Image 1 (cartoon, one colour):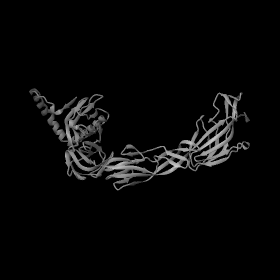
Image 2 (image 1 turned 45 degrees about the vertical axis):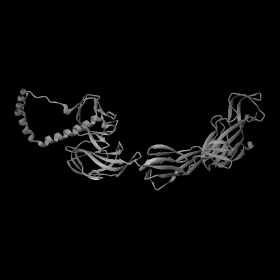
Image 3 (image 1 turned 60 degrees about the vertical axis):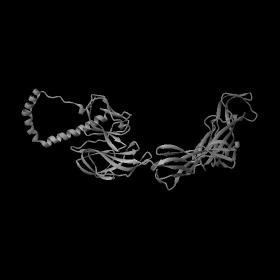
Length: 520
């Protein structure tokens, strides 16, 4: 239940009760007066200590959800209080909402007790604006629209007054909570923050004349205050503050709305078209790269991208590194998807006078251009290995229990690449193996392993259970030319030769089936 204290009426005492009270005053309270007068410092200490303990206890309970407080910022806004156990009275001194039209905190509710679960209506003018709840225990709670409770209160010092400082950005009719640097009486802090001080005068200054958030730039506007005290020079970044009790100070920044066209582009990465090198056609696979501006992701194509950006700072991140794939079409090897991979890295940028760069941020002061420069840092080429199994010339396969013709897995070529032994060859039937190595890699072929296959095979009316591979030829096809290497059966397994990767390369292992080294 939520009760407005101002509406509570006290009953009138009866005459008999008044007579009894007079007797009590004379017999009990008067002697007690002399007792308390003799120990004033002790009484004062207990009083302040109680306030501090109550404040800390209330904050603890709220953080535990006793009560849980939710700010429903609909067109009929209200505060929702929910208790999950026996309610503890929650005394509210004031509820403020921030008015973007007046740039001031306006009292919405005052002197209210929350005695159980329920809703506390707020004026419609509070809709979509942040609010502050100030409790009689000295806690200050800040809520954004449609959010749950958050607090910046700390354990108070006895006899001190809380000075709560927060910062907001005024974006038209929207109010954006900000984290801004301040210096209060020599102490540096980030908003929101609370200081507990004695009544008096203190210095206060804003560390930043401009703030940046989510692609918006705000310029210092003014200080506003509500409570017991005030700001001497509201429009000065450095000012004085008088404090006579609890005080809320708001540091305000006005967001800049002027927009300019900024065109983003890149250079150094081929994002479209066809590259013709003699009889070889090379086409890039990717036509865009990723560009992130103010935490929004865009795809940047070969024609660039133009965005409307407000005056001020903006966070810009071009994709780095970029991996571009290239499809090949060459007479010697046919079509090779992803035959080449190039890694590109940022090497610099070019802007006009209206766009300046500082790390991952740009400052926009007018219509401008920003182009990121890329350079190729590494080129990788595909090394494709496939097997070609066949029967002796004139032989006919009439039936078989497992495939034995064409690109059959299991036949491997022993190579040495960058000082390591690598076995090249497909691991699945009718699927070639594709590996990528840097341009200029030397491939040393050392051996062509033998492989066998078991099953039921009828070849030329004869039946076989086991077949053995017989190396006949290894062919190396490069984009644009062909180099063939014959395996000398008499010198087997000496099949040593080498080649260098300067383009996508196809390695074909020609094998003839026989039985135990005897021709079928």
